[in-house]
Amino acid sequence: MSYAKYMAPSIEHVARTDAGLASALRVSVARLSRRLRNERDSRDELSIGQLSVLGVLYRSGECSIGELAALERVQPPSMTRTVNCLEESGYVERHPHETDRRQVVIALSERGSAILAADRRRRDAWLAKRLRELTPEERSVLRQAAPIIERLAHA
Image (cartoon, rainbow, N blue to C red; front, side):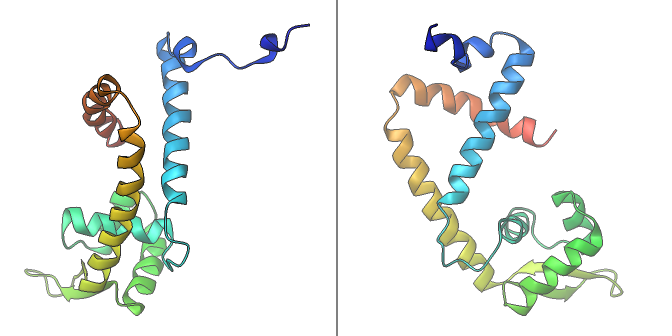
């Protein structure tokens, strides 16, 4: 009996149909995401979820707890716990809402901005090194795919 009979089909083979493409992308994106998470500094005290909240604040600016919860697709009580931890460690700050003083908004602090930038630099450096190992044609395909993958992520 041949060993090849038990080998998993290649991504190229699986991705020939839309269902196969969905499966191949799911697996590949999950593996890449896991690999990038592994590039974090082991001394970092922040969880992936906490870093994600800092990233949302960096991209979106000040947000209420409810807005953060919606953007991160978690329940507001869970986001409140996350923000409380981030605030206690000095990564975020609370400010009164500009027009509704009953509301509070969360903003990225200087410390939060610095740790987020360091984390991104480290992981970007790893990925840039891996991209340099690809052919120019492969990098061109990824340049075209990146905005499409981003659209899928926000759907």
